[in-house]
Amino acid sequence: MKILLFTLLLFQNFTYSQRVDLRKLTLNSNIILFVERNDFDYYSKIKNDHFSENKIKIKSTQQILKNNVTENFLNTYIPVPKEGNDFYDNGRINGEDFMGVGEIAEPNKKYYSILFLKKQKSKLILLAHINRSDFDWKELIKKINDIQEIENTTSQKETYKKNIDYYLKYDDYPSYEFIEYYKNINILKSDSLVLDNNQLIVAKEKFLNGIERYYDLVWNKFPKEISKYYIQKMKKISQTENEEEISFYDFQEAYERATHTGFMDDSEMGKLKNKLFGNDEAIFEEKQKIMKTLIENAENKNYR
Image (cartoon, rainbow, N blue to C red; front, side):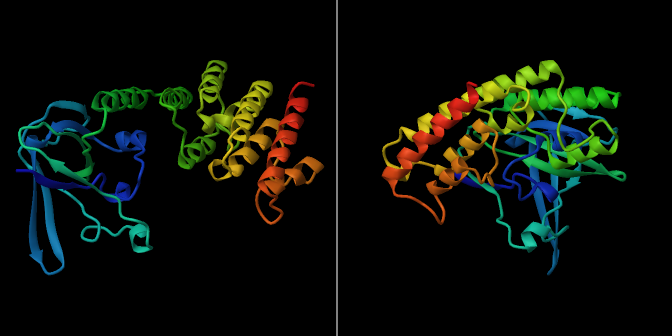
């Protein structure tokens, strides 16, 4: 007999996020536990017509990944805040989609998960519960351990450097809050991240292997290599014979980055580029000629 399990990926501010910021989640947690489904139980008690008391009881663990508090978490009832009961999420109220995960649980099969507990005043609460059978738990635990090494760093400059190393290692990118914080303490002078020489080399190699989110980090340091990357991307897109399979937006972006021009480029080539889609959109045969012309223009600029 199969049992339908419905587990929320995250509680509180993390409930409706499609992508977990594991770094923030780890740093905001006091206790992190790697557990199996039989290591814990959920309880819900209806108190009245408008409030339910939700708790989790952790009976055992597979591994303690983090614990920096003295509070006992075993065999005690820990509150589980729920949206619409203990707090109200602005995104939910304003119409953002609810994100949850439903899974079919098979008997005699192990289902692992990670519990994130946070101390509030003198009590522990469940901050998040990551429960997905398709997760690479070893990789996730490795990331959590890496984050804790950063947490133990005392120098703010060293903490910034290690955070950048972490983001690069896992093909990730800092949030707006991260950048604003390091601007506030004068480690960053603008919205642009600062990388040392080794980090720049890593970011460039990651970019050339397809991690295009690092474009802003590397384009002005390695303009020739970045241009060549996007010229090759333009050529690949232009070779697609079926118009419906072509993303002219991607081609346009590749051209702008290959030539270091902007969206509002009003040069002859810029106006030609705008005919790929929009109000001045041309027929497909003409678009193919336009793409060829733009590629040649990008190559001429790059090889001067």
